[in-house]
Length: 57
Image (tube, rainbow, N blue to C red; front, side, top):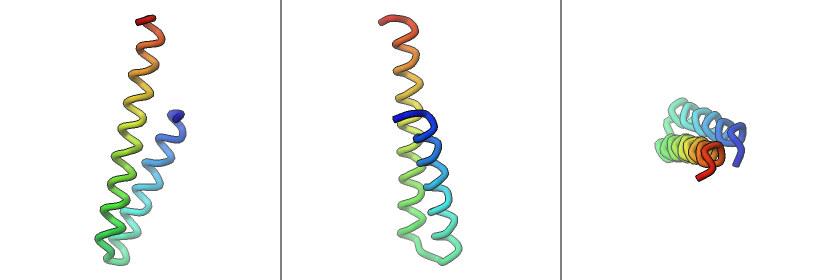
């Protein structure tokens, strides 16, 4: 997954969480937080993979 896709997933999750708060839907809020975490994890994994490629290890 690219960095842009990871960021997009984070933004989508934030929007879902905010919408869940607005309509008082706790399930939607939790789902949104999960998407944000997944996006951050993917972004971190992409950064680590980039470091490995640069160092040649």
